Length: 477
Image (cartoon, rainbow, N blue to C red; front, side, top):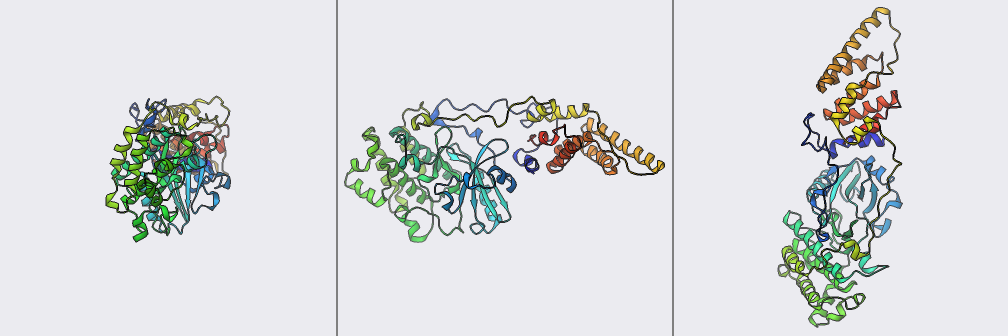
């Protein structure tokens, strides 16, 4: 079933294009030999071009990716006590994902859930842990995002084991999250729910990203803030509503976290700032290794963000403009400053030479697959029914003629005609040919019918197990 589900997703993950011999400009036929180059400047992070596209996932695929939502795969900070669990998972293409599992009670309306997921799925930025898909199947409500392997700001800031985050890196965290907020505000996603240090995640390069899950508005959840009331925007306490200015208030609390290295209620922090008790506000683990001038700028910005009246708070662009000039060590990767070593992933399986068909499927080269199947002659045709000689002769004549017409159509890339002719041959049932199944499988794929394509590929493999047809064809995405 894993193969079948993967093939069903081929249409979702890759928009099908009409079959054409001239494939020089078609990435589906000729994928790039290497991923796009990253920026030479570590502070710029990954390029937006590297962000996966948004798609829908099947429940069985996500079950497979998370070992049936095993408790061993839970990555929520509070473990299995979290109201909506987050699991890590690995897709069949080896890509790591994060899967957030909601209850049906949280999202009773599947249409509302799907629409909200697609809305957030349109947001794409290198400062976000981007939403790359969703699943809405029966009572299941699941969101799929890029997986961030290096924990949260909460852990690195409050529960560190090896080293405290240095000052320059804290300023980078503040800027990157401000950039994420500014992007979302500009692109129509200004309402971020419950922004806090748990929502700031670190990717494989050690760069901080803002979790996309807080961008999904869940009005049926009963609450929008999981943090202590002391850290909640005043207007939310007054009327229970989140506004764009509420996000700025929450960003101010993150600035306090970065400054102090501990949880300080905003009202208490503001009292300290007014009393000019700045040394008491700063994290002692920095051991004085920070710029007083820079700290004063950040403290002033935090004070502006935490104003009681929403209209008195700065807008996202001012956050970015204020924090940008404070950046230093632009050429030092975040992972180096964080003490994070990037682990190289071992290959999943021992490497074995592939057949020409396997290599063509691995390259997603449908032209080569077609040429191989044109050159492949029939084998293992077998089976007859108990018919009279006259009936057998007529059926054989019709069947072989249908197969011959199918071959001509397949050679000429008239795939719909080939499907009809090969179907006539297969439906008679007196002979079984794995080649016919394989050819009709490719025809179905090129006619945008991936489920039928995989069924034929699996039939070919059942008839002739030495052909790994189904396993090859599922990789043509």
